[in-house]
Image (cartoon, rainbow, N blue to C red; front, side):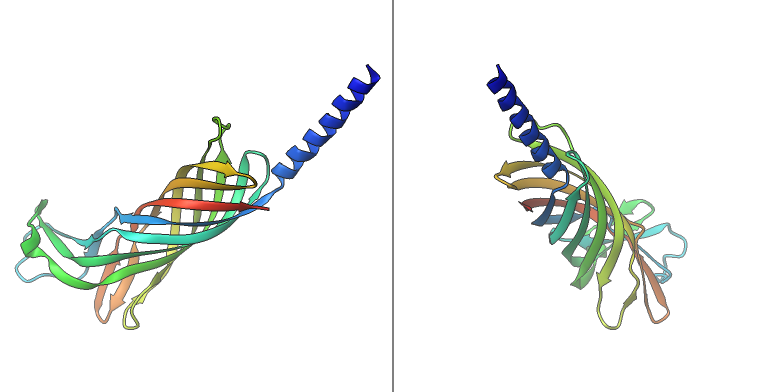
Length: 216
């Protein structure tokens, strides 16, 4: 009986130590995948000739792009972690489309563009891991940070505050893990100027990412 008690006590101490190590552990992550722009609005003080009597709106036609990045996380408990993240996103702009009185007037209205919209997002996130479902570890999170555009030399565009929400699932592989996550990045839009022309470019979109996490 005394031997059994000793074994149980030793096991209890071991498990406690393991839980504590997990709660205070850190991790690094690399991720990459698809980025699709969902906020494509374009506002400008420029007036098209003959459009003064119409309700005219414009948008930018983007191709799907890519997102790549990395983050560092620290677990404050077994379920909650704080993260510092940097992610680069790029997407090609094909053209500017016009909407007259609520109707998209089609390809004939598009003004061709030859460029891309590139940004760096520096985010502070909070992430909550849900109870484990078998081998899977689902999580949800959100964050705020600074979005910095990478623009041409002759275009002046300031960075702005952005926010994101993300969901995903990870599969542990030893002390590491592999996962899939989807993240929505939102902003109030970039204010740009080129001479007397002022433009607000809407910016926001969804990233679908594959991620590999290194625990330490």
